[in-house]
Amino acid sequence: MTSSMRKLSKSMSDVTSNSSSEGPVTGEDPLASSSEGEAETTPPTELELALADRDEWRDRAQRIAADFENFRRRMATQRADDIDRATGRLAEALLPVLDACEAAFLQHPAEVEPLFNLMLSELKKQGLESMNLYEQPFDPHLADAVVHEQGDGEPVVSEVLRSGYTWNGKVLRPAMVKVRG
Image (tube, rainbow, N blue to C red; front, side, top):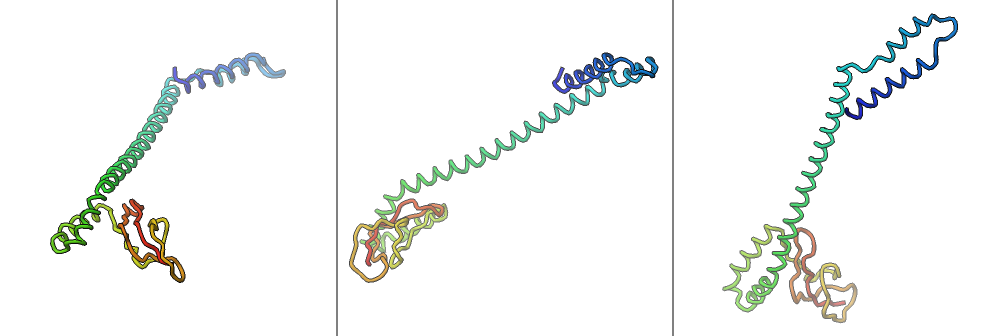
């Protein structure tokens, strides 16, 4: 017997026990009183029990469906986060290769430029961006100042010693810069 059926049966039995213990009220016919009490104390019909059972199962099904939908959304979000972390780790592992390409580009621009540009454009499609900080105000969140020069005014990046990169808008590696000011 389900919990809703038990509640319904208990409430019906409570009504029966209360009406029989009170007895007839003075001036009323005891038979009339008992016929009214029987109408109130009849046990639940099969239809009422079936409807209560159906409602309980419907509630359970709706809760399970909602739980499953929440689980599905949570797993989709977690899968996307896992993919982002994995591709970020791959991009981070490629940074030494980018540094080597950049150094080779500075020595032999004509030979290395096509390969270097191709690699940067493919990584850019995946979310890697090179930070252009030259002559920009120094931001310690974007760059590490390793050399300081005397100058007037606000600190400004005077030379980029090692390129910095962002991955999908987040700093993957801060640039190593020389600051003037």
